Structure formats: C-alpha cells, structure tokens
Length: 263
Image (cartoon, rainbow, N blue to C red; front, side, top):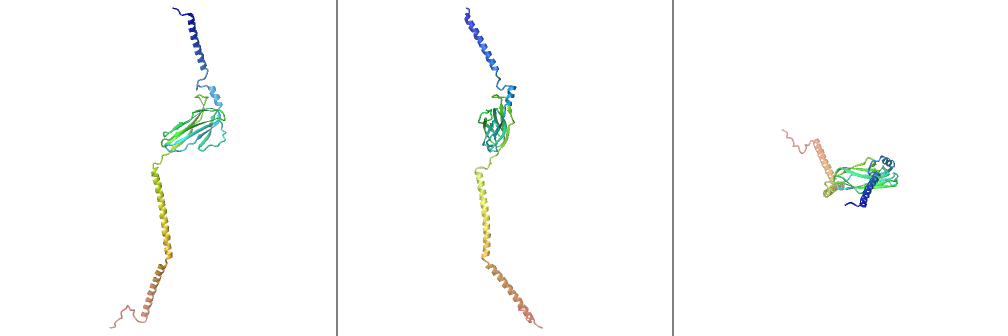
C-alpha cells in the first residue's frame, strides 16, 4: 500500500521547518557574547569608564574568644563625601563606575566570616553607593587575619576589570582570665581587706605615738622628783666630805679611824 502524496509533503515541510528553526536559534545565540567571555574591546572600554570612588570599611580591634565582631564596607561612587569618617572606620580611594563585588576572607584560629549581604552590587554613577556587612566569629584564642577584597566586573559577568590588593588587618583574640568569676571576686575582696588592715595598722601606730607624747606632757612630776632626789644625794655627799676635812685639820681623827695606842 502506497502513502498518499499529501502526507509525504506535510512530513517534508515539517522536517524542513524544524531544521530551519534550530539553525536560526543557534545563530541568534552565537551572536551574543557568552557570560564571562574574553572580549578585549569591551574590557578596555569598561576600564576607561571607571571612576574614582571612596571605600569606607571597619577597623577591627582585638577581642576575646567566643565574641563576634561586626564588619561593614561601603563603596561610594564619588570621593566627595560631606560626612566625617565614622568612629571605628577608615577610608581610602577605590575604583567605581561598574558592577562591584566585595568579599571578606578570614584565616587563623578557626575564625569565620559570615556574609550578611549579596556579593555584587552596582556603583555606576557618582551618587551611587553599595554597602556590605559580615559577622566575624572568634571561637578560640590566637591570631586572625582579615582581608577585604573589592572587585569591579565587566557588566554582570565574571570578567574582572579592576581589583586592588586586599585591605589587610590583623587582630589578636586574647585569652580569657582563667581565674575569672568567683575567684576574681575573692582575690579582689582580699586585696581590699589587706589594704584596709594596713591603713588601720598605720593609724593605730600614729594614735599610740600621739598618746605617749600627750602623757609625757601632762605628767612632769616624776622627772622633777628624780631630779630633786639626785640633787639632795649630791648635797649630802658634799657635806660629809667637808666635815671629814675639818676633823683632820683639828687633829681629831675621823670617826671611822680608831685612836692610836702609844707604847
């Protein structure tokens, strides 16, 4: 049994139409550059269109194990910013005028940087700005290095057109005091007690010295009587010496010398 002629024609045109559609679609897709493809002319043009912006970022400081540090970064499309630099932040000129991505890398002591925002954001005009934030986790003591990298991309591709050296910061995660809590309270308490006892001892010695001086000033009788007795004893001994000399002068022997016997 032969196939009818009209059916063969329909099948032929169906196949021909499918091939034509697939060819047109492939040609249309190939006419657009692939994402992240290397196109020298576009890259050069994009680099020439870059402007000078202003990067503002957190200045991290030392911390304790188990604590978290917030980190912020903002890229302004123009370096002319009227507001002063916020406390705990720094600023530096940085390329703008493109799709910009920000990454924060942490290394050392099991430190983790958790991103709280999208990586890529547009900073195309002078009035634009893009902000990013992270949370830095510090589980244990040691040293950590924080690196902030800002990258300008070719449109919304992965082709890099500008990237400076990372902003590096080094922090120390200090050890906690092992004698903290109750022991720290006891140690502080005893220090205060010893200081109080030392002060009381010094005050007691001062009062005793003052009392002794006051007693000597209020009771001079003892000293006068001692001086009077000493003077009386000296006068008695002087009178006895005079009497002894008078007796020897008159030929009378002293009372203590026995009379001599003639033969």
